[in-house]
Amino acid sequence: MPIDFNQHVIDEFRANAGRVGGPFEGGRLLLLTTTGARTGARHTTPLGYLPDGGERVIVIASAAGAPRHPAWYHNLVANPRVTIEDGTFTYEADAVVLAGAERDEIFARAVEADPGWAEYQAKTTRTLPVVALKAIDGGSPEGRPGDALKAVHAAFRRELELVRKEIADSGPGLGAQLRINCLTLCQGLEHHHAMEDGGMFPHFERAVPELAPAMARLREEHRTVKRLLDELSALLAAERPDREVLLAEVERLTAALEAHLDYEEEQLIPLLNG
Image (cartoon, rainbow, N blue to C red; front, top):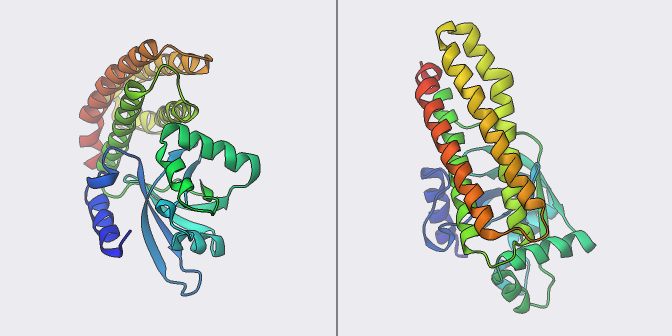
């Protein structure tokens, strides 16, 4: 992509917490900053990515099927330490070029989710590299603590919106990548709630005793969301989950989570920002 187009996307991404229009609208996008293999200069590129569970995401060096690998790929081969911006967090990661069966399995997942990857591969004689970006620190949102919490919530809302659309648009079967998208969301929510239960909530209970009823309600809502996440995970483990049943479970989760996030923001953001 032309440099000026890339810069427009980068500016829009940073101004809108990761949301952009144009060809990336409605998709998963990150900003990858690499160190130049020859110059040592820092270069930022917008890229679509695939969730991969845990602490890593996947990018593919397609260059839209061009005959040569993109510059960002050469950079990270020479300097694997990269910086990722996902619209909420900015963090350091190590890039690993996948090979063999692992590369082929993940590329097949990508093609199943979006046949455009196969079209790019068909345009070139090179094998499109598949790269795992493994986080080495969690990063943190910028701004006041309450604004940071709201940004994290917005990221969960957006990912849930994407997953709901992907399930609604899927065929009778459930693709491997879509399963991973769902499970990655489940893992992220469980981790976030565990951090709140173990840290932020006890702090507020000590500092503001009159918040005890609100903290009790939030903890109970965490248990409700956990139950819904467990039920969703069980459905995803089935060989051929029913799409309509799965979508209904995601809708139940969405309703419960939206109500929980709204209440938590109402109760905690004024205190966190105060």
